[in-house]
Image 1 (cartoon, rainbow, N blue to C red):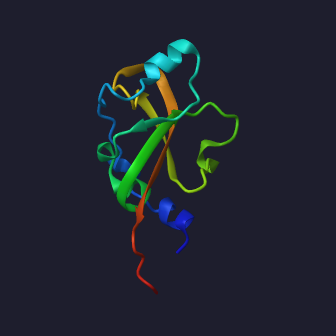
Image 2: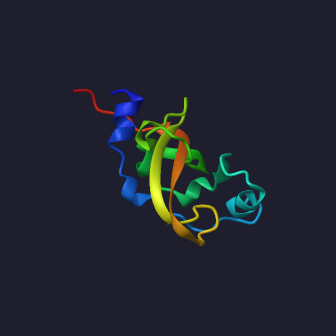
Length: 116
């Protein structure tokens, strides 16, 4: 089964957005500076590997989605991606003024798929 097919069957309900350590760059600071489209790395332990169709997450990053294309078509070579419409900033855990789309990307061990 191809990577894209595996990602499509991932359980996205297990994404969590806890506040992260102070050593990571805050999206609130980026919003104030006007830079909102760069990636912020999150603690890989903060998300479920199942949300990305992975066995184990080694790295995870997030960015606000502000592009004109359909968020469901977003792809990043070498990463498993998913989009989430959320009322909370995934970096700080603080509530947003309005729900916004964020793209999450993860790398890790891909789940073994049983042969048919």
